[in-house]
Amino acid sequence: MPLHDVTADACMHTSTTIRELGEHEGQVVTLRGWLAGRRSGGKILFLTLRDGTGLCQAIVEAQQADAFAATEKLPRESSLSVTGAVRRDARAAGGFEIAVQQVAVLHAGGEFPITPKPHGIDFLMEHRHLWLRSRRPATILRIRHTLIETCRTFFNARGFTLIDTPILSPGAGEDAQTLFPVDYFGETVYLTQTGQLYLESACMALGKVYCFGPTFRAEKSKTRRHLTEFWMIEPEVAFAELGDVMALAEALICACVATVLARHEADLIALGRDLEPLRRVQAPFPRMTYSEVAERLRSDATRQQIETEMAQERRQLQAWIDQRGTLELKLAGTQRTWEQDKLQLEIHALRTEVEDLERDLENRPRHMELAASFTWGKDLGGSDETIISRQFERPVFVTHYPAEAKAFYMKRVPGDRPVVLNMDLLAPEGYGEIIGGSQRVDVLEAAIRDKGLKPEDYDWYLDLRRYGSVPHGGFGLGIERTLTWLCGLKHVRETIPFPRTLGRMYP
Ligand code: 4AD
Ligand code: MG
Image (cartoon, rainbow, N blue to C red; front, side, top):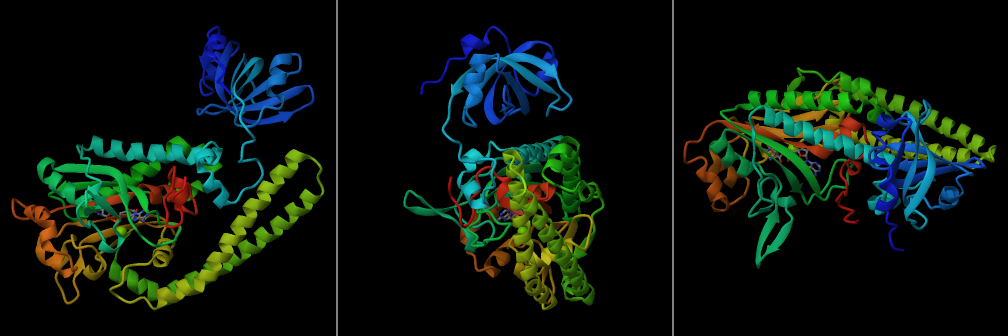
């Protein structure tokens, strides 16, 4: 169907957006958007319009016969332009509504696949290109925007220069096991895992630099924390030691939390985020060494903590099951469609919560076992990070990991079993690692050989240690992991517009 030409209809009235409706109280305006919902009250239609800036109610009375006929059966998510008077209404979503006089349907769509009825996550992910129009994903993506903007502003204001590092890369920047190969005119190159090595060279030129871009890891991990394509912001600073790097990370996280809280309080509440734990995120963050963490994991206190948590979770599980029962009874007792839809959504949400919690509870004994038998030398696993990060109200720095568990570029503290001057920042409430960083190694060639890599592949990088090397360091903050924590989500897949995971490359 050809699109209706609205310019002719709209030019007679001020064209505005839902966000700006308040500036036009009492005037007749034109809004363009999509039909997000409709309720019928017999001789009156309550349309919900969506235009990317907000939601608003548009009221069509039967006397407006053309407008009424055009919208009475119009499928959800059709695009339209409405003209009408702006009225203040305290009950309306944005405080204003429109008394519709005229409607132009721009494109009458088919039946929209995503309905007010509950859908499973796989169905929604399969329709991610349409699901983005729903309130929850749009809210998360707006917070993502703020998070990214805050990080950029943070570094820009502190004299950092943005350096765009390459995405095609000749070798591993992190772990050779998780490289994505690309055929580069007959030669194998890789999608970048980090901009760090290039940033190190740029920091020797510009002092303080950062990069922000997509990074790729062929990690065969089907967890709630792993994407194969994710966005990382990485600062690198010349003349910096581990303590400087940690102070920078701490200030960055405080800025991110403060800005997201200031701009998105209502959004976070709509996502069901408890704001109190976020408000408690203040400097200084606790700091612990890896060896202290290893001991903590094996301690009786930790075992008891996990047992207490499990008991709480079992009570929570029962409460949700009871609540679900109550809602199911209510559903059986109502004939009203809107109430049935609402109850079905609530029941579905509870069912998902119950399933997730049941799965968590099933895994707990194994996680408890892993912690109790934790041996020095291993990297911390996801469940270990969860356990530790639940023991603190603020993000926790864990430093001095065994060199054997970490990448080749970290500065070593010599010893029988050397440790490195690194830090991982674990977000509280069980979220785990959101930042990884370190002071950089100076004796590079040996470190490269040690990891079974070939120094000749890193010749250019070795140059940095041949000509005026200085102590330097930096870190990488994963945007999606950080956002998962800030929004209080269970899974990282909702924090990126089109997630790439072990199981998903579509749409
Ligand atoms: O700890 P990582 O691997 O550190 C680096 O890449 C360093 N080169 C950074 C640097 O020092 N310049 O990754 C940093 C962060 C992690 O803390 C995590 O937030 C995120 O990147 N990250 C992932 N996010 C989603 N999915 C994955 N598979 C991720 N792997 C790492
Ligand atoms: Mg890491």
